[in-house]
Structure formats: C-alpha cells, structure tokens
Length: 256
Figure 1 (cartoon, rainbow, N blue to C red):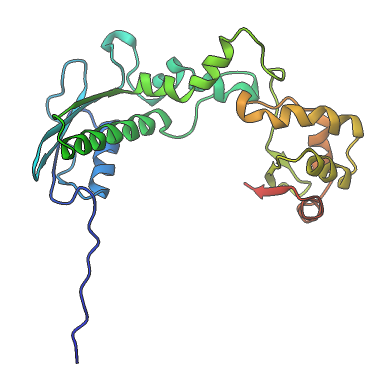
Figure 2 (figure 1 turned 90 degrees about the vertical axis):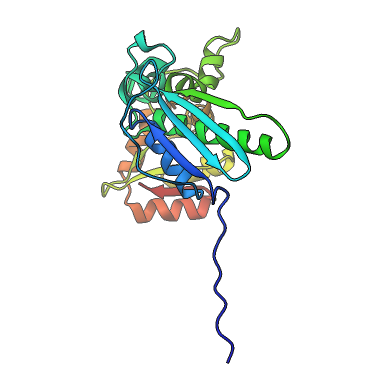
C-alpha cells in the first residue's frame, strides 16, 4: 500500500526573514501581511524608530539583497498626524465619509493604516520582483498622510475641476430602513429596475424621478440627496415585501 503523499503550499516569501522595529502602527499590519505571504519573523520590535517616529521593515535572505521599507504616519513629524483619527481628519477621509450626514465623520475602521500597509507591501514585493529580474535593491517609503490622500484623490480631483459635479453635493442617501427595522442597501445600474422597484412599493412618481440621478452618482459623490419620501416609503413596508419588490423589478437589496 502506497503511503499518502504529503503536499505543502509554497508561499511567495517562504525562505525570507522579516525584521521590524518602531511604532506598531501601521507597521504591524505590514508585518502581518508579509508573514501571511511566508516571511518568517518575530513580532514587531518596539525598539528605536527612525527619525520622525517611522518604523523600519526589512526582508532578507535567499538570493536577494535586503529589501527595506520606511513607514510612518506622516512625512513631516510636525504635521500633527500621529494616529488613525488624525490621519483621517487631515487627509479628508472624514470629510468625504461625512458627506451623507452633512458633517465630517470618521470611518470606524483602521482605513488609513490599512491603505498604508497595503502600499508598503506592494512596494516591497515590487522591489523583490525587480531584483529577480536583475535590477538593484530598492528602498520603499510610505506614510499614512500620502496614502490617505490617495484614497480620496478622485474626490479631490472633482472638487478642483472647472465643471461641477453631475449632481448636488448635499447630505442624504442610503441605507434604507424597512418597517420592521431591517436596514438595507439597494443596488441597480438600470433606471428601469430602479423605477419598477419603487413603483412596486407605491412611491410617488416625482420622488422616483428625482431620486435616480443622485442614487446613480452616489459612489462618485459619496452622498445621495434623493427625496426623503423614498425613506418614508420603505418604512411603510415589511422586509419580505421589499424583497418581493426587488425580485419583481430586477433590483438587488442587501440587509445590513
């Protein structure tokens, strides 16, 4: 009887050593991603950081020269950006996320830190790939302030454009609430499905027409100031009725 074969998944960074030092955020997320890719290393060493409070990450081993990265909350230590909250505030993430409510609002997630970590890992992997193709070792430098600005760059570009937005920038938008308290999102790219969904729920025709364009552009504007009547309409129906309306119209609804 033949013995069963033993297989092991080979990860991209197997055989490489990971060394980290400095503040745990956002460098800790970088180390976590690299370990998941196979790099072997200890937990983040909270030892001396580089100038400005930056952390240092080094990948070494194999046939590679050391791949190094510097990661910090901000390029300028005097900027006042020292954590997730200040990064979101200074880069405009809070301003964009708060458009729906009419005032700045923080994302309840380590958004800026995660974006910074992903960019750092991408830079290190790109450097290793460049070495594998015969290029020199490269040093990566990332910061949460720059990463935060990158994530809102489309909104910054639109705000500085000569032409105005396709729709009004004002408070309002999903999620909707059913009469039994179920919060839900509505999704469709088809104006016909949009209209059919709301007609099935007996929404006023003028509200259906006025609501489509703000809803269509909500991802570009981070808000959707459609008529409050549509929220009133969903509150008048049970979740099962809303599911049926979506099925009949071709729209998609998702409970939150």
